[in-house]
Length: 421
Image (cartoon, rainbow, N blue to C red; front, side, top):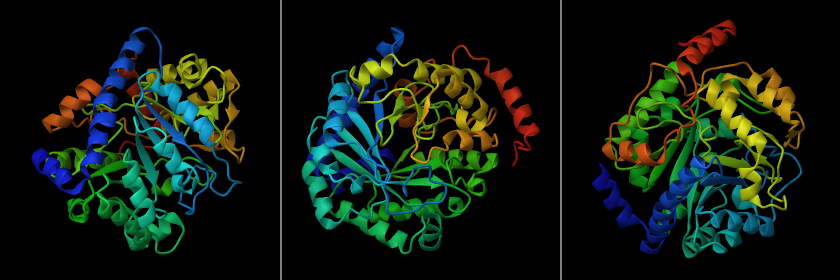
């Protein structure tokens, strides 16, 4: 599998772009994690992977989106973005996730990428703004991989994303990237309406035939002002997705990303272990994209490194979440999220101003942590890489998760949620 994938990437990717990926993301990314490990030993936390939502606006209206896409446009200006990335680079960071809204609606996105040739960017996009001209510019800049969101085929895409011909237009953007020999991925938020279409070997073979280099399957999280709990996966479906990812990694010549499990198949949360935090379109520093509360902002005079390192709000979120779950604290224990927000007097970072009401209305549900259903990595490469560079980093060492698991099942059963449904 891996030799086939490597050969396919070599044949279909511009060598200059591949070199940027291997050096800026590969070598420097691993070094940034090693620096992160050393900081942890000193009791200092600053994430090696920083995710920036650079604006709220989007051309689509996806079901269950938690971003204020219909609100007045809010975006982080180029000077602030450059200052934030430059500060993070001083402390070893080289990889940044760029989100929105739709990042390609930000007028200075490409200028941002070009300003940091020593970094690597993953741009989360619906692909519809990636014209042939934009794809050529991305190739010229050379240090970014578009991660193009596909939420279903023709019918499901239109329904999930609130517009017509979404699949066709998105595929056009994907093909524009691939024609320019850009390292390109496809992301899917797996839910009830697309699990049978896209969590299949047939779909992966289709993406390989098109030329896509990697995929990222993450599970739909019912949060935000228009949450759709009917789209959420049942526990047995969460296990099904995990098993699919593990088996296909050992079989198919396409990279498959996940962010919620270690090499042994144990669940983890990238916020709880401190490997990533999120910046909102207003510059607010949030524990993760779906926790829309903050105490600090990237415009604080101390700079993003010192501000995150010294944040008691982020520290409490990491610690309390790790004590109570290996999964998603927002889904499983919204009461704990409210507790920390109230304790710190954190502000609502949304434009709509209803984040607390949404939190209070949430029904607890299972997330990726399903004790007893762990599925270890099969392929040696993924197993080895995760063991050293993507694990819990000791975040859960002091927690009694056996006892917590029993409490969790009892609490969710009391809320009408069972392990099987």
